[in-house]
Image (cartoon, rainbow, N blue to C red):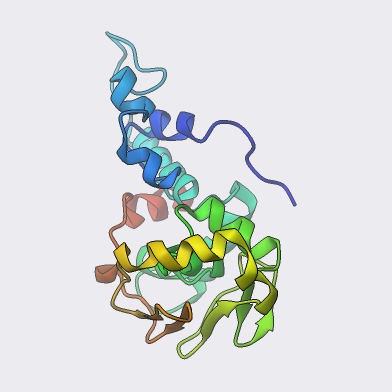
Length: 207
């Protein structure tokens, strides 16, 4: 499966803001945006972005945030277009319903890339069935838990201690003692602190 392998910090600098791609590291003084002070490639005297450029930047921010390459992101956009309602909001909800994102939102991982790795390595169970597909979409009522053998790992033992300090969004619930999460309802755009504008993404693909 194709994936981005270069430094994710470059993506934040390219976007001009923190996208939380490295979890807690983004909140420390080691964050390149804090250390270097200006976005990658931005120079004095450079002309301002055109409308097309601004739309592209919003689309790229969405891709970077959820760790998706262009082809797969375009498929999600096409699916959002087929649904009733506002396409930009539909796209955001689809991104949030991805299994790797839900694992991240439950606090099982510090970043979406780490959550994706947990799913791909078979540590996560969806409705008591093992799945290694990060892009799998959850439904209302689904449960997300850990594979029995994975509860013996040092990562899981440390997570049990750290999970109390983590918060969970209102559309999810979490049994912190057993590390079992449940999808209470489908997310709405108001539930999600998006760092990109869905309207701009729709305008980008509409040309």
